[in-house]
Length: 114
Image 1 (cartoon, rainbow, N blue to C red):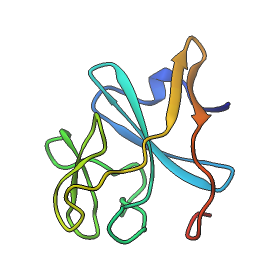
Image 2 (image 1 turned 120 degrees about the horizontal axis):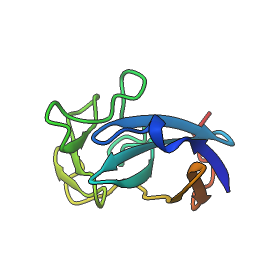
Image 3 (image 1 turned 90 degrees about the vertical axis):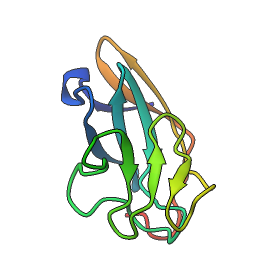
C-alpha cells in the first residue's frame, strides 16, 4: 500500500493528482467516498488534466478530459460523451482510514507513465 494524502487534503467535490512508483493517478471525493483512477484517457492514452489537480468539469459532477472533451462518470469512470464513449477509465484500489487515503494497487507502469 502507498499513502497518498490525509483525508482533509481531498475535500468533497474536489480532485487531486498523485504519482506512485511512476504511475500517474488521480482521486476524487464525491458524497464522502474516494474514487481513484489512472490518469490516462482511453481515447489517446494521455493524461486527462491540463493543470495540476484539474480533473472535473465546471459543475464538478463529471470527470473531464481537457484534451478532447470526453466526460466520464465519477462513480464508475465510464465515458458518457466524447471520442471514447462506452469505454472507461482504469479504476484503482484505494482505502481510507484514520491516517488518510491509500493506494492499494491494481496498476502497472505503461508507456507514457513517468
